[in-house]
Structure formats: C-alpha cells, structure tokens
Image 1 (tube, rainbow, N blue to C red):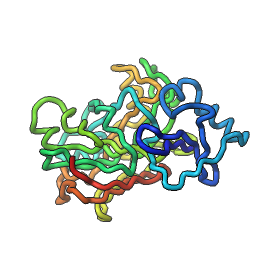
Image 2 (cartoon, rainbow, N blue to C red; image 1 turned 180 degrees about the vertical axis):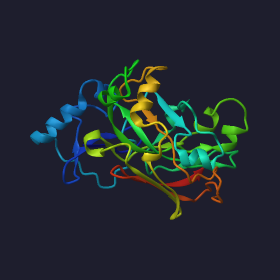
Image 3 (cartoon, rainbow, N blue to C red; image 1 turned 90 degrees about the vertical axis):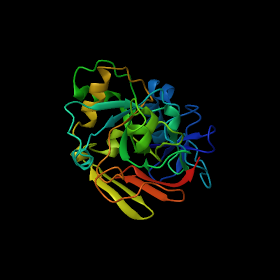
Length: 283
C-alpha cells in the first residue's frame, strides 16, 4: 500500500493510492496519517476499506504533496552508515551505529522549497531511506522483532549544513535542524510492497547531474538492526521516523561536487518509493 497526504501545509488530506494510482480519501477512517492512525491499526483498516471499495476517489489535481506522515514525535538519524560514504569522508567505519536527532519541524513535503540558512556556505544533500514506525519499539529482543513495528518506508533527503555540523562546536544538531532540512515522501510504502529494504537503489541529482547512486546493500547496519539498536536507548513510538544513512556522493565527500546554491533543482528517488523534486531557495 502507498499512503500520501495532499493539500496545503497544515491542511493535508490523508489518502491511500489504489491499484490504478487514484487517491482514495481516508478521512472516513482517520483525520490524518500520524501516530494515532498507526497505533489504532490504521494500515489494516485502510487495507480492508480499500478492498471493500468504500473509500471515495479524491481529485488530486493541483494539490500539493505533503510529507506522508504527520507530526512525528521523533526524527532519529544514523550517520556514516554506508561503507562508501564513510570512505569518502575519511572516517573509520563505526563499530556501532552513530545516532543523532534532528528537529521534527524540519520535515516538509517532497517538492517543497528547501531553504539555505542565512549564514550558510556549505549546505549539502543526502538521499536516505526513511523508516516510519507503526508500533512501539522498546527494548526489542532481536533485530528480527523490528518487522512487527515498521509501518513502511519513504524517500528522505537529510539536508545538512556542514559548517554548522562540524565547525561550530557541539553535536551535529545545529547542522541538521535548519528549517525545511528534511523533505520526506512522496509516498509511505508498506513493507509488503516496498520489498527487501536491504536491496534498494538510491539516487540523487542536482540540476540533472548525478551525484549519488548507491544501494542499501552497502549499509553497515541494516534497517532491522537500526530499529532494534535504537530501542535499547530510546522508545520509538508509532509515527516516528528514522533516517538510515546516505551513500557516497555528497559535496562533503572526497569529490569535486559543489554545495547547493539558490536556484538549484534537486531530484531524489529510491526504487519503488517514487521521486522527490525540490528547488533550493534562501531563508
């Protein structure tokens, strides 16, 4: 199944896409695709309603695409999680997942404008596979237990300001939490449709020039391990989002790629999860 949220910011309509790609209005089941929806077995209820044909078609013409999940309580991220990305930044592959948190209000729609901060000189991009929690993860016993609490997957761009991240003291939060720094979506795809999360191709281009082209096979720590690992240190709730790391090809890496500039056009896609296309502006 593929979930979306369509409409103006703060007024998004929850929908599920049927087999023809038509948007089916979910408002008879839920006011939004959020933690409460997942906690109340919303995916199963939406699946049943879709099968029974009780959801009306929504005319999506001209509607903005919002992030596919609303108001996550937590946006957790994993750094240096691809062997090729660790190599290009000159970092040693970590022995355990590198965990940091990102402000949840960085999440915007997949095609919304991304704003370069006012004093920024090194705003960067990172295509990532995002995991959306469908159940509560607290002290999971094994990585395999993660399957029961994963609602689905989405395309994420973990936009980063490298000076803020590395040169301004403290942890990575300052370089990761600027407004608009996490376009998400366009779809939330359930695991049965997304397929093997460790066999997905990720791509990102700037102004049509390929920058990142990787595969989740190169993750140092897989999706299930990440969710299990995080649950040993924090409680993940339904609707929370986890960014799982980025492959090689960022501007911060050992290459000649420039950082983002106002007016740039960025496309981000992952196999089976659709594509983002956003313009870079300035705050």
